[in-house]
Length: 193
Image 1 (cartoon, helix red, strand yellow):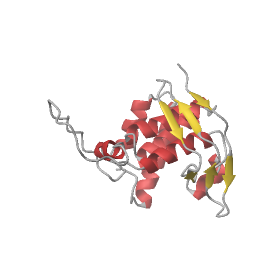
Image 2 (image 1 turned 45 degrees about the vertical axis):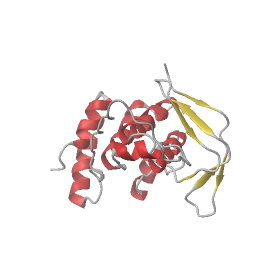
Image 3 (image 1 turned 90 degrees about the vertical axis):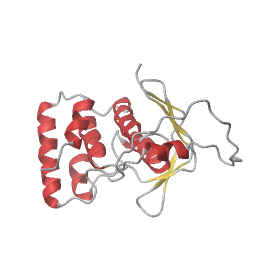
């Protein structure tokens, strides 16, 4: 099954010159049929592309990756899904939007390497119902303990040398172009030196 968007897509560009506000709900259904919704009124800033790369790949709110970046931004802010699923939906939504495979894989590498990460516990807590009375029923067996994931992404706080090494890995990935998403994840998680 291919992914698909549903509904109208209306936005207002905000006066700050960097953000936009959704004037309608935006829904994306990933290839597995999971619904990813961003509500009317959400404010996002588009793809987190360093300004120096805008002339090469486009700005944060341009290009076919724009809608995918809105989905990704919202779920990075809300953290109601795991960081891994949130980064993966960015790739899937880019492909649905018509972004070529090589470019979508490059952007996927970039968010896996330098995008935000959070513990699965954060997603579990973010999904608690609002206004809960905190009277929980006893469960017959304890819930599984989620794997603890470091909060800092591999790309956070890195030096220029680290960025040059990452750029070298990205170039190698582009030459290969047939890497699976799992191979891209491994490449992004590889030690920086």
